[in-house]
Length: 100
View 1: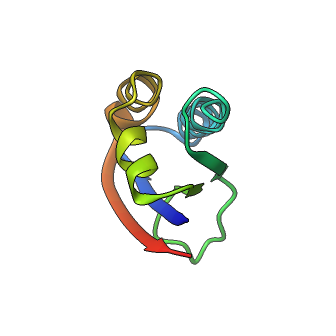
View 2 (view 1 turned 45 degrees about the horizontal axis):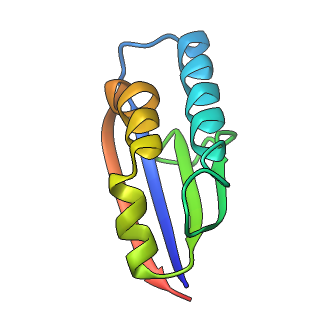
């Protein structure tokens, strides 16, 4: 299995209220992919970070294999969420993938 972790930092131009709405949209969109995209074992979006965090949103997901992660990245349902709920609002993206 492969764990896929991403941390996003939202653009500075958004108010706290706007950021909360954006975070909710990211969470709902990505967590809603379970059962729609083959190969996802688990997918969770964390939006309640501590003050010491350097990011605003964290995706913690688990895939059946590297191939499943690769297919996820180009799956139409994932691209719809990524292009509609995530990418327009993000200034920094960091990722870390590893086998478990």
